[in-house]
Image (cartoon, rainbow, N blue to C red; front, side):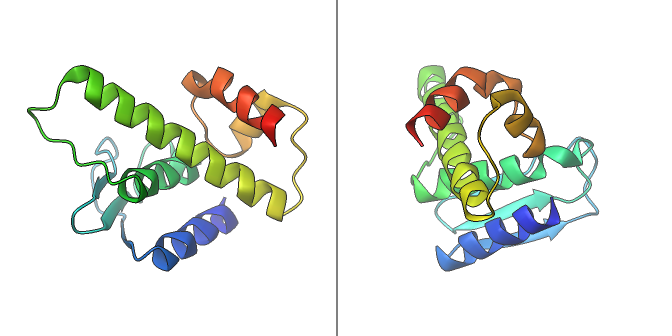
Length: 131
């Protein structure tokens, strides 16, 4: 997992995105991105550390896709942006896995290896078939 986090940190830096890794946050505090400032705060104390690569890639997605959500945004807009960031994250991770030579023969094991949430099963399968 450390290698994938390093790859994603470098990806963020190359895209002009700053990442603050904070291990002092509460274990239930979500990571967050600020598109306007191009900053991500990644919770290094997150209860489910195995999800960290996907979470970081997801937050990178929000910034690269220029998502600027506020409390007044419609729920459908928020859902759409979250899904777009999830797909973006999956694509970054698929590219990374190809780079390091990981086989894409099993959707579930691939998702487990990179902390991709179960809600992405159908989308991951579709993306893997396209790769």
